[in-house]
Amino acid sequence: GVDQLMRVTPSMLKEHNKKDDAWSAFNGKVYNITHYLPYHPGGEKELMRVAGRDGTKLFSLTHAWVNVDYMLDGCLVGFLVPEP
Ligand code: HEM
Image (cartoon, rainbow, N blue to C red):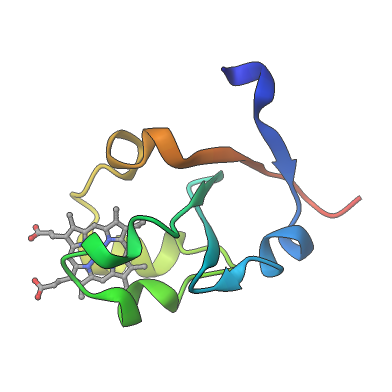
């Protein structure tokens, strides 16, 4: 539930930049993209470019029409927040 969501800082996000542990942020929401990687129509390599960081800009440049909130709803980790 929403009560279990985390507050994720950019430095926490950066720790999840591996193929077997990949998180990325889109529009302020942090998703665990690990299990989606093999299913990305644009390929794993493209998606890994945003692993461990904010992918909002690259995402909107490639396919702003794709609904990431809907697609990755089950992979939501929490919300991107500034460093303390
Ligand atoms: C294609 C989802 C992140 C690059 C697609 C398509 C979907 C998708 C559904 C097919 C779109 C269509 O045919 O209309 C996602 C999701 C992402 C994500 C859910 C986030 C978790 C990214 C990122 C990049 C990227 C960050 C670039 C660095 C591409 C490219 C294609 C594509 C280049 C086109 C592939 C082709 O048609 O040959 N993605 N994507 N995607 N994606 Fe992503």
